[in-house]
Image (cartoon, rainbow, N blue to C red; front, side, top):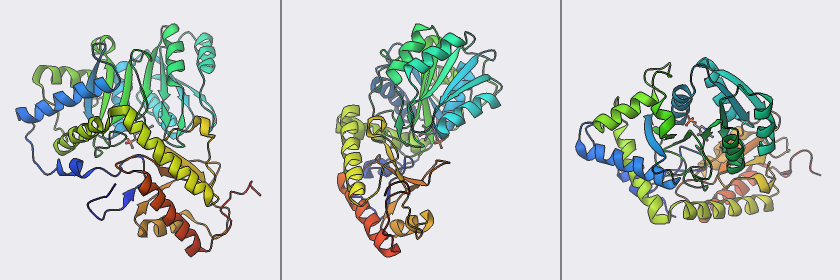
Length: 377
Ligand SMILES: *Cc1c(COP(=O)(O)O)cnc(C)c1O
């Protein structure tokens, strides 16, 4: 897939490389009162519900800001002030969810597994049976700090059986991995414009269960992040409550057109799987080893062990690959030296192969011979 400009290819999990049609949609100024603009917002809200089969049961509330703003809005609005949130953690985004819940004064418990171990339905069963005061569970669907996939359907059904409520951070899975609001009951599922829908960054959205949002008035301790107020205002006026990111909204609508034209979620997943397969097999042929077991690896972002060679530094490696037109992503693990490569964005297997060629040439330039990590002979 050719990029019209000479911008580098972003192999990062948002912001990411967008299609030309998405960029072009930003070349127009919209007034926030304009009925044409408000019609775009309405269409986006409906189409996002369709992607996760949430029509009828849920409403979609967009929110200004990066994805974290929407996570914070969902938790602060949907968890009552006397609620108790259990957060399932196996990476940095789980930790962030727990931290923001604590900061807004909600009672928060955490359950943490190592970064290469998914949370299981059995874990959640045991945790809910052990503490009846838990009202809500927070789950990261694809934990982008490694690319690990947590079993949403199984965990959601355990939570529903216990009569508890689920809040899902589906930021890096929405639009690519299958999610069905009827099969996986949730009160809130959160994502953002600049991930697998391949829009520019700048807005998030919450797919909220209608009955839960209806009873959430007055929960939120923040003015601008009050999801109930944002929803009510939008229903009443068709407008965003405060200044909308107009260019981002228009481009996000164009990105949703491209998502549908490609064949929707199944086609997007198939392309990301081809990207991921090409990336992993080419990197393995250079001697790199992925951090995760393939069985729990989502085709969204791949964590690789850094080369053990003493000549390796991420900074120089990054800069040299960048000169060749590809942007890599640093690792986010505390225990092991890693780096990450995203498989998402308006790119295909050709770009992945070319990126690995840039990595190969960089290794040669840096004189790196030992690509395998320390524990591999
Ligand atoms: C990108 C992402 C977020 C949001 O991060 P921002 O920096 O606020 O955009 C949250 N959770 C996950 C899993 C993500 O991948």
